[in-house]
Length: 490
Image 1 (tube, rainbow, N blue to C red):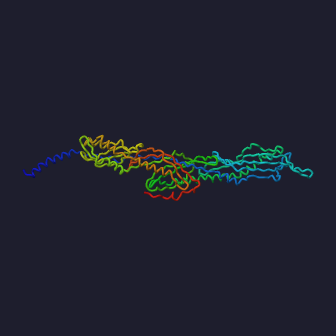
Image 2: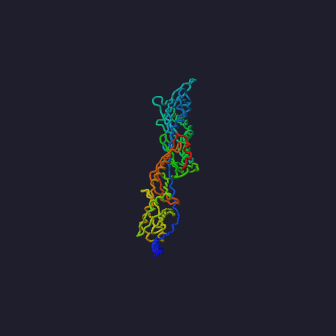
Image 3: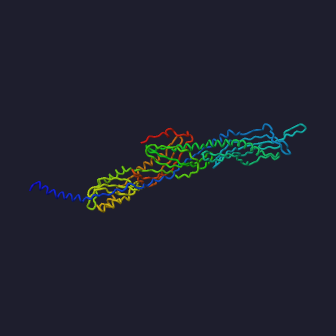
C-alpha cells in the first residue's frame, strides 16, 4: 500500500476523534449583568459636638476696684454740722469709718463685691448763753470697745449676649447690719448715715465693675479665635486631613464659683476625612450664640476603601489557575475580575476546559465588625447565568463552585480601619495654634455598611468618642504661622 495513502487513512479517524472531543466542550455565552443600577448613598454622619470649657478668673476685678474706693474717712479732728433737729436744734458730729479690703465671690449667675466696714461717731450740740458758747456731747457710738460694723456691697448679674459678649449689670446690695448704732438721745441713726456714705462710693464704681467683668471674661475674642481655628484642615498624617466643618455654636449660661466664671461652649461640627491635597476652605463668620441643639459626642465617618484593582489581585491569587472537577468534567479558571452593579458586586470568572466562557456571580457585600472583613455571603450565579446554563452546561450550576467563589470574595480591612483610626486620634489630640488645642480620642466603631462605587468598594464605619477644645488664656490669641501654612500633599 502506498505509504502516503496509509497516512491519510489514519488521519481521518484521528480528526474525527478530535472533532468529537471539541464538540464535547460547552461554549458558554452568558450576558454580563448590567453595570447600571441605583447606588446606595452613604448616609451623612449625625452632628457632632466638640465642647469648649471656658474658665475665667475675675479676681482682678476686685483688685482694680479696690484702688477706686477709699479705705476709710476720718473726720474726728473737728466738729462738723450734722443738721438741725427738733428740740435739740443744730447738732454736730465727729466720725470715722474704715473698711477691710474688698471681697469678691461668684455664686451661680451673679457676683457679689462687698466691703466690711467699721465705724464710730460722737454727736454734740453747741449752745450759746449770754454770748458764751460751749460744746456739749450728747451721745457716742463705738468709742469704747469694738466698733460697730456692717457689710455693704454690689451685686452683678452675669449673662451672655447673642454676640458672644458678657452682659454684666451691677446694682447695690445692701446688707442689714447685726447691730444698729442709733444715738437715741439725739435721735440720730449713725448706721444709716455711714451706710449711705460708703454705699454711694461703691455705687459710683458700678459702671466700671461692669466694664472690668466684660474685659476680664473677653468671651467673644476667645470663641472667635476657636471658630476660625477649627475651620482650618487638620493634617492627621501625610495626605490625610480632618475637616471639622463647624456649623453652629451654643453655650451654657455663665456660672460662677469663688472667683472663677465658667461657661461651656458647644461647637457643632460635621467632621470628615479628606485624602489627597489639602482641601481649600472658605471661612465662615462667627454665628450668633444660642438657638442650636448640639449633637451628643463626637462622630466621624471612616471609609476603608478597596479599589477594584486591589480586590482583583486578591481574587486572582485565590482563583486563577485553579481546577474544578464537576460531575466528570474539569474546568480551570483563567481570569477573574470584579465590578459594581448598583448596590451589588459582580464577580466575573473566565473558564476553560470542558466548558469555555465567562461565569458571573452577583451578591451584596457586607462588613463584619468583629472580623473586620468585607465579604459577599449571598454571592450566587447571576440571573443571566441561571437562564443560559441549563441549555448548554447545566452541570456548571454547582454549589461547590459557587461556594468557592464566595470564599474568594473576602477582603480584610482591619488594617485600613486601624490606620484611619490612628489618624483621627492624632487629629483630635494636637495643638492647632498658639492658644488652641484639641483633645479627644475614638472610643468605639459602629459599622454603617458597605457601599459600591464605580471604582471601589468601601466599608464605612462611624467612629465615636469625645472631643474638647482648650484655650491657653495666657497665650497670644492668634494662630501660629506653622498652624496655617499649607502642608505638602502626596
